[in-house]
Image 1: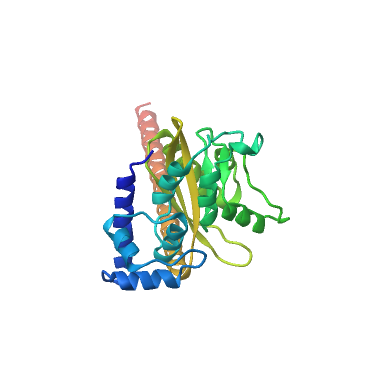
Image 2: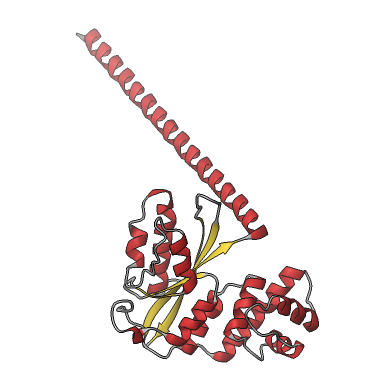
Length: 286
């Protein structure tokens, strides 16, 4: 189980850094509390004293408060989600979730997952999806052809990534590779920015993978967060730039291939020339 003090200190550091990044200064506790309370939809408001404790690393926000903070300051939710899940697990994870007894679900952490807007799945070391949240189900239901609710519980996330076809296959393969590296312990976190457009709109996401240990087993918490607003415009420019760079790289490779083939032709012609001269020389000797 994560060290609670370290978790609180890590949250305070991320909280303060994000506030400074957003407002270009270190805002007062009164200002922070006011801005938070304006956004405290579905949760309780907080006092300046509560904000002071958050900033100083003396208190950790509740799940509902953390959700509001993540949305407001665009924190990396995986940094704190894993700690919250580890703290609230009361039943063992099982690769039979969705198939066997419903009591195998993680009841407390499920409430935390469902309070977050980003799509989340918990993946076992085998690749089996053992837990998802409401946002995950909502996203896949709205984006399925027949709009049928699909949880993917009991299905293998890695297998899906390995067999994805079309324009999304590269992103899926990268995600599958990242999940494997996190599950093996090669990476502490994996992040992937990718485009996933619908017929109605252009969309960009950040996929994040973090490990969580439970009953001596390692699981991967996979989250997908939509990039919205100004960040969406920045993401569009970023992806367009990366695509141009990719095409430029492909052109360089193509030109290098052409140059290599031209060099091979020169060598071949030179060899033919020498062979012709050698034949002419032998004919003269005869």
